Length: 62
Image (cartoon, rainbow, N blue to C red; front, side, top):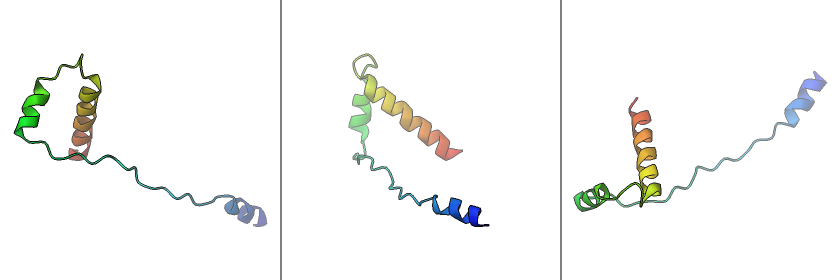
């Protein structure tokens, strides 16, 4: 019993803060039209971000 209690003391609580994601404004029709004209070769980070958002949207829908 004493051994079990000594193990429990070593399990400290960890304070986990939510990830602070940047706040983006809502895109309108003009932004959507402009984003469709961006090439993946010139803006790979933007298209990776779009893919991650799409994956998150699909996971939240299921």
